[in-house]
Image 1 (cartoon, helix red, strand yellow):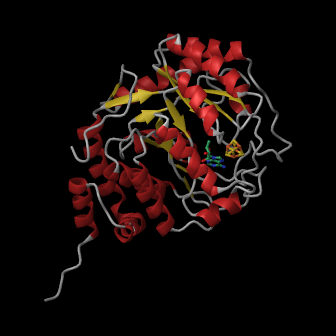
Image 2 (cartoon, rainbow, N blue to C red):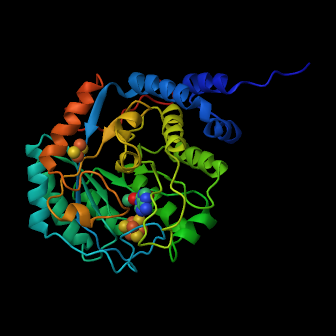
Image 3 (cartoon, rainbow, N blue to C red):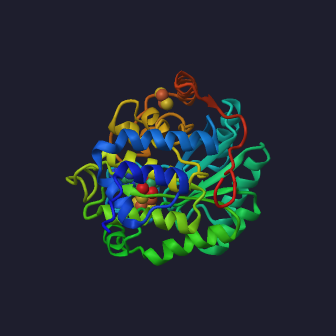
Length: 352
Ligand code: 5AD
Ligand code: SF4
Ligand code: FES
């Protein structure tokens, strides 16, 4: 008897029910441009059922743009002489966190390049002081030895963001020269074992990246049980070796976000700044396609534009207060609301 092949629409239904797809099935849906809206609607429904209508705002503090690494796509790479480097003091960082409380944030994300000035001990002091403000603390500081991660967890850090960028080892090691994929994977395992909520994710549109690689990224996130997933398109930066690369595709990135919501229904998924840099109101589009988190910038003044991973970054001329009220209004206009809790990951067990 002949088996009728499942249509792509039927695959979406299956993903809604079972939260499982094979690599080949994922590739089919990633490739299906005509299915973008349907996939987004299905992901929006699963988002509503599993994590609700609250949108969690995380206040992002970009405290140093000094980086020892040399990623081919990133404006902060050490060989970019055009980036004017800065580093905030411990007191300045804590003061920004205090202001974030004033704007009504319940989480701050401390983000920097891989700046070794911030030793394990110096970072631990910052974390302890900020934890005294009753905030959840997310770190995004790159690759470090397990002991550093352990010390920061001990100091009270709750979460850690480290995108794997791509699970294809060869591609990763070509685009992140001098870095090892195995070490990045080791970092993510250490962070999980130490009890962090772990965020990772993909940079969509890396030259040489295939749909099969994106599908395998999704399966990797499912296997590691990622708590958070940050996905954004590549935005070519003229000050880097990938200046002439093709930008990542917005709708492909959007399908990736939707598929992640279907396969990791409990995860916290941000609508990333890069999405809105590509398309006006891109963050609302992504919030309606499976995402439930936004990370407005609380860094002040000139530092906002000096933290330039890619060109055209939104909000560099706005103040933290403007971004907070802007996002609040936009979330309400969507019929959603700003969540008032710290926004830890929901756990329903294997399937709700
Ligand atoms: N375009 C889009 N995203 C970028 N990142 C770095 N450079 C770029 C770029 N040119 C992303 C990487 C990194 C995160 C902090 O920013 O995925 O993990
Ligand atoms: Fe440094 Fe991160 Fe940029 Fe790589 S992506 S150069 S590690 S800031
Ligand atoms: Fe920054 Fe809208 S979020 S101005």
